[in-house]
Image 1 (cartoon, rainbow, N blue to C red):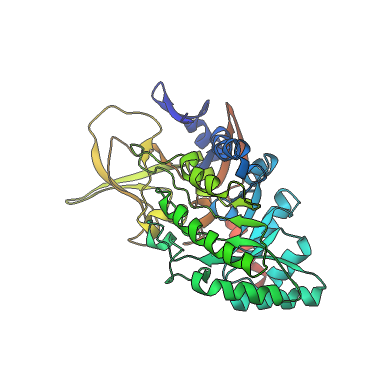
Image 2 (cartoon, helix red, strand yellow):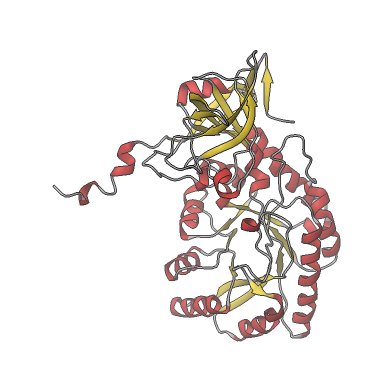
Amino acid sequence: MNNFHYKNGSLYAEQTPLDHVAKRYGSPVHVYSQRSLLSAWREFDELLRKCEAGANALVCYSVKANSNLTIMRLFADHGAGFDIVSGGELARVKAAVGNTAKVVFSGVGKRHEEIEAALQAGILCFNVESEAELHRINDIARQMGKRAPVSLRVNPNVDARTHPYISTGLLSHKFGIAWENSRDLYRKAASLSHIDLFGIDCHIGSQMLDHTPLSDALELLLQLIEQLTEDGIELRHINMGGGLGIAYHHDESTPSVSSCLAPILDRLKGRNLRLLLEPGRRLVGQAGVMLTRVEYLKHGKTTNFAIVDAAMNDLLRPSLYDAWHEISPLEMRDGAKKVYDIVGPICESGDFLATSRSLAISPGDLLAVHDSGAYCMSMSSNYNTRPRAAEVLVDGSKMRLIRRRETYGNLLEAEIGLAPK
């Protein structure tokens, strides 16, 4: 069920009119549907519960997709772990749920203090991405008198068939350890005094709409696992990462979670390996919209512009990836439509939310930018000294502020004491 829908010509989130959200909290504002979040979670949870290979699986929500504490706590309350890529995200897990025992720590550039903090917190596992990182973790664990739980992130050189900026599984990418070198590095890891080899990890890309690359990557991992067994190295889990895509064009269809994971679950049947998954976008992407108000309409000879109060600092994906988001008015309006580029007030030609959209709109109208739950608020910035937007969670007919809009004071307070008199 789509929890963002029109009723009597007005756009709602569940049973809440979205113009009421903007009236109370201003614009731009990010709005999330709790029902959509939980529905996306259940797609994974219900599938894994009924499969032999998924019985003790762990779904680790990828915090980078949307790091709001309330959303993190909502998933944790339903059994989620977390995939993090920074010490800051570790701090968010602590703030949201306290317990860090279900945390996997990914990322190519873990700093000394981040590794130390993660070991002190007792995380589930590090996903190690290079030999140099492996030795650093071992050295820090030795200094702390601990043993570090480790998986090696193997790069299988499998094309995820997605945008090049969010593809991570080829040899030309910075991520992971080349499949050809991974067996030797596992042997080295097994010899290190303060390393516990827990598993094997693979994440080949994001916004995947074809499950075939995942299956191809799994076959290579299973080959490696057999080789490691011959070496006397027994792993306890296999982490297939995340990356399952969503439909940004509403006339598109996407493969179900079941169709994507069924081949993996089938191949893991009967193996003594715990399955870990790291979905992000698939859990939150379609659960959010961003509301923005039309400030001006500017008509030109070649292009009409709808200048809105949201900008690339609020939603970077179109400028960064040329990503598509559906745009719709909060109130259906009669009248002739015109084709507009939807642009923001930032002083960059690349500041746009959408191009060539046919809309019947007037200054003051509110627009919804759909499918903005993932990689929108979490990638926002203060460019042009713009405060970041508020976030609101809708549950039925109730709305709740889950992040206050920043103020100019918030932006200046870290510098005010350093300013010259």
